[in-house]
Amino acid sequence: MYARIVESSLKEIAKGKIDAAKSVGSTNRQIIFRIIIPETLPSIIRGFTVAVISIISMTALAGLFGAGGIGDVAVRFGYQRFQHDRLFACVYVLVILVQVIQAIGNGISNYILRKRCLV
Image 1 (cartoon, rainbow, N blue to C red):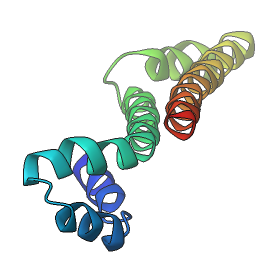
Image 2 (cartoon, rainbow, N blue to C red):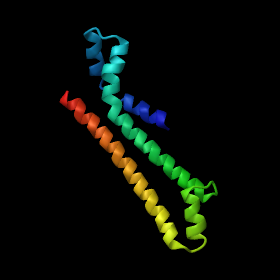
Image 3 (cartoon, rainbow, N blue to C red):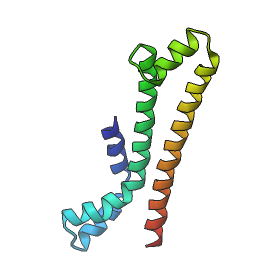
Image 4 (cartoon, rainbow, N blue to C red):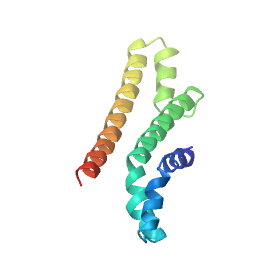
């Protein structure tokens, strides 16, 4: 999944930037490290954030089927034993975890964007 996200990020680069770099005599290595990676890094970081959040959701769902983890705690103790406070606590922990990861990913991506625009 993450490879497809990276691929779509790499395809977003305008061909004109690569052609301009080739016209001034840049090598392939220079094009990769000075144009492609800096241009796609914010998008790649956002894609990584999406992938991490998807993994968290999949592991919570796997806990529903007995794989353990916070999903298992939510189902076994919260839902099956009618202890709704534990169920809501597990849901709140998952929501807060996802929001923190999303904020960190967006912060890093925005920092790189601002740093690139200032240079």
